[in-house]
Length: 153
Image 1 (cartoon, rainbow, N blue to C red):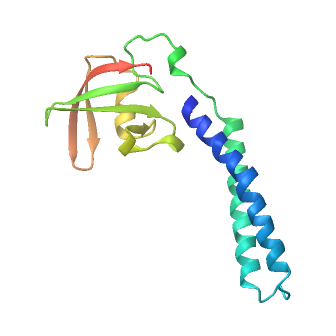
Image 2 (cartoon, one colour):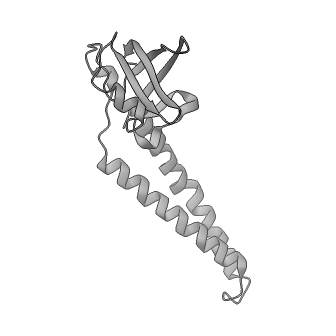
C-alpha cells in the first residue's frame, strides 16, 4: 500500500477508536436504562453498530499489520511502471491523455485518478517503460495506449 493509503487507514482507525466506539458504548448504556432488552430496538441497533465498528477496527489493524508500505518517492526513477507510480497515458484511439496512480486495492478511486494494482489497465502497465504501447482488454473492446510519462510522486 502507498504511504497515503496507510495514513488514511490510520486516521480511520483513530476515529473509530476515539470517537465512534465511545459513542456506541454510550448509546448501549442509555438503551439499557430503558428496561427490557429483549424488545428494546435501540439496544439491538446499538449492539449491531458496535459489532460493525469492532469488525472494521480488526480489519484495519490486520491490513496495517500485514501490508508493506511503499514510498515510491524514495525509489530511483527509471521510467518503468511499478506500484505507486503515476502514469500519464495517451489513448491512441481518442487522442486524449489520462493520468493514473497505481495503488493498492483498498486505495483505488478512479474519479481521483487512482487505479487498483489488479485492474486491467494496471496489469497491462506493470513493468512497461515510457514510450511503450500497451493494449488494454476492456469490456467495450481493446484500448491502445502509449505511456507518455512515469512519475515517482
